[in-house]
Length: 491
Image (cartoon, rainbow, N blue to C red; front, side):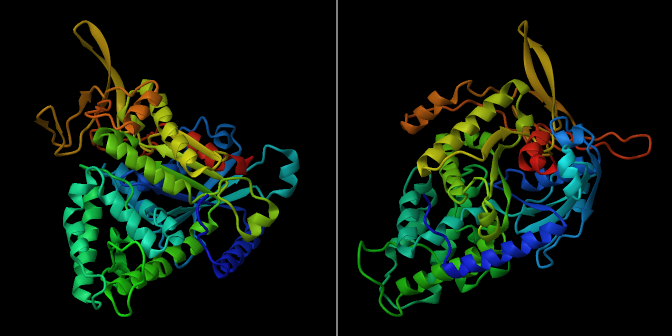
């Protein structure tokens, strides 16, 4: 099991916050839904599409409260946390629907409240329920979630694990400059601000190189070095792992002491407040992953995604809340891991993407020794940017997807202008991912993963009704995700 992440003082503050939330929930029933994801997985698009489809009567046949007609009204309301920036839904949906561009990715925490009026399916519940549920959507970067395991690690452990990982595979090339500086540093010498800054800059550059599209690696803590925000240049972000001796303690005033102190400051100033004020108050969670991108980047990216999912799932304790746990230290009782961009595949491969992602999650669960209760997996597309078709080639019909590639995308040497549509064969995923993962784990030399065409398409053009109202955003399985995440709260 993961190490303890909080002190008793933290637990007391978390319990107080939970009591306040529950007291408020007696008047206005609320579910706090965390939305996060690993790099470029589409968190902003997911939230925007979910809200748009609820507000505008989208096609949601598998979301039972809507399908049965029990939801009478849906509206946006002011969020309860005045100190948290509002998720700018209107700006993001304008970018998607009017400008047909993908909105900017998540760089900080934000929140949005959407409220549904409904009639309970149970006559008994109708007597006691107000028939209203508010969903507080908490959007935060996946890099912040990957920082939570740091709360259970001291500086030596953090340094040893980070350097060991940096010496493997493609990371060994990306980390060469930083590792050279680290090994040359005199950790017992007096603390030097310029040395600390050079080490921190080289370390951050290594993390950014790992995150870049051509690598698409996922395990990248400390995440705030990638998204520094208003802490940019602060001592709490000016640190890096050091090559430490197997035993011994740092001398007073040394570089080692400085880095260790700043690492602890990072946990206190950055990680703990996020855990206490936001993460520990969540009821449900969706984690979005771009499994297709990892497949395209090769075995190492797939292994790194599995490693990241292991770290992510170790932060959760899925399971049913008792009355006491819901008041004092509530669990995130449902976690959905969703593989995005299912619209980049023909529908015949959607279940295969499901199976591939489920195998990644199952392996992660096995590695941390936790039960899989309360965890589900699915493939989805928050916004469907393509449609399906067939083309004839050499007397055979081939399934293809049709969409408008983003300006600058190149396919088979042809550069697109962002206006012209094209059809591409998306490739196939394996029917059974088990043998594929066994070959990846064996370190088979020259292993080629299935070739999947991951082309960046523009958001779809939406037709308008006679009244000038645009139709709801098309999607794949968004309704299934809604049903799992909060459908039971509308029963």
